Image (cartoon, rainbow, N blue to C red; front, side, top):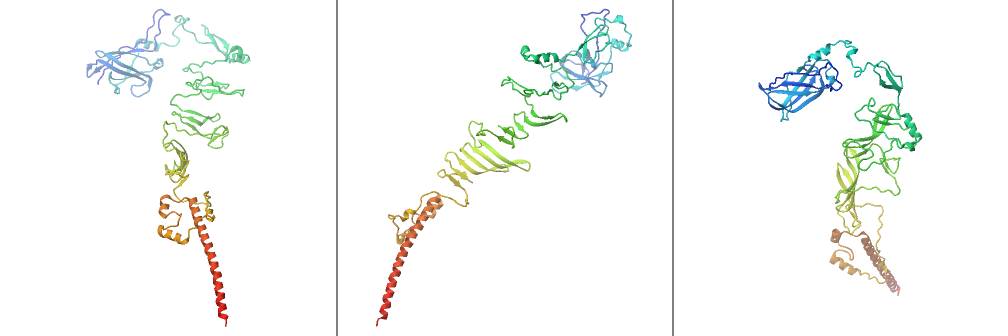
Length: 487
């Protein structure tokens, strides 16, 4: 696009022969008129225009803010726009206008037009630039509208109250509100609460927009220096649930910590991020102000709850993980997990993020599984593996009934016949039964003792028979000896 831009007028204002107190001020805006051609023909239709002011014909620095005019209707190439870069933009130095445009309905980037257009002065501006200092007499100045230069000053602790037509000033003592505050402190009931209305946020009241209470050099936006009197340094009251006592803008981060006034450094101890996550840099105590571990809960019969917030419990309903750092990742250690689907508590280990159940507690059957999650609920304990112990005490029945007078001790020929037919002792499970159902330890101990006691009774009976045989054998030997000695 080839464009031709012609500066038609730069109207800054005019002085009338007589002064009019009702005339409106000129302001800092001016009218810029140009001619736009597109491909050698006058442009027509809506255009978006963008204007920037620079202090050089090329490069240089931009002066003021960018001015934009959207959907400006151009007829026969002629357009007129008001521009306002502010009074400081024109202080006697040369200025150039950089113009860019695009069709009004387009959202494409603007097309920059070259070269920049020089902003030239009007005849009145040239005259004002050449007026020497002191060439305007007092008779040409309306003293009712123009104030003379101040010719006096006020002492320390006082401020200018009034500037007179001659430049003299009227001073008054600075009022820091001390008298009113003292009167309020002396009789607060008579005056009601002291209400401080915050100033306009756009006004600058200190060098860095800081407010200090009881301190002359505040180091924060609001710096409260507690004088040590009774009561907190900052008290917040009557905030509703929708207001909050302390808040930050949504999406920002709240940081609470310690500030070192000597080094002007801040250390963050408590952090509330944009998602609501809370981080504590040091130890946390609940019910105590002196925690000696990362988390201390202190109370009379304290209860620590970990709740699952879902409507229907899942397999990972609630968990506690004890993790160690491995290669920069926290993926190894141990866990405690409540299985909401099966109503079981699982305790196990974590390795590279993979969980292994070692202990399972079933709520319904009150049974426990070690190294297995397949529990036989008819038993209190299911173990997948060997058990090693220094001693196991089993409470069960005992086999002393074998020694009762009415107990029938099976003869050995009968026992031999049973073994021949069944391949195992009477009252003792077979190998197939043990492989299928296992062996009740207490019951088996009783049956083994029963067989030992039965063997004992058989041995006692055999010992008696052997004693009788020995006695009979001795008698027979005596008889035979006597028969041999007779003549």
